[in-house]
Length: 274
Image (tube, rainbow, N blue to C red):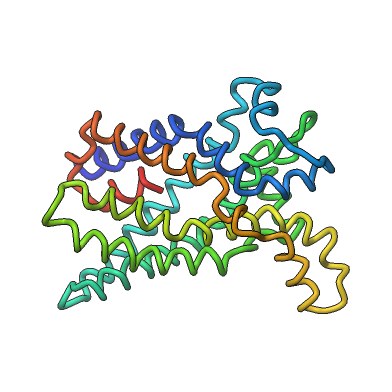
């Protein structure tokens, strides 16, 4: 019963926090992929603030239901995989911690990636009329239709592995100095690896155009060039200020509701901070 209460509490808090920051997250995702969305709409300039002004208020939470539902495959697969490795280890040092985090992260990524792609597609859809990515079912169908189910997975794995190494290293360095070591480690790691996350999101969006346009290229190298020709340094850091604001708001909210009192550190790290 205590475990059921713990998971139930974790889910409710996770859903609440994701709903709280959903408008910021949607703005961030659009900033990361803005030039691709301009291509989608065949416009020379896309004004994000003007777009939100012309939309209904609830459109700010587009993709949030999918983000909440992703909690199930993420948390349960992470906890199951993490505990199995943890029990078989004899010396839980930094290398073990990083390996455990990376392996459970990759296993979770493989399970939840199609849902994550659907969430990104929903949040970045900027059509003014009928939506293509409305429900989760329709979004998953559309993603599968344009061969985008696991598009960008390489960047996702690269991000997961490096994130596991960085967050454990920074946390171990700071845990004796501050009670907020995990929060600092999380934010620092995410900022360092932000360009890789941007590349992943751009691939999740760009698979639409890759399927429609780049597939006409003669060979594999031409397709790769088509994928990366518009990447520049500025676009890699699109929405980073929104990313910082979102995470600071999450951390502040966790303090207010005293979420740290939950008995499972893994639940705290994995249900709210992702």
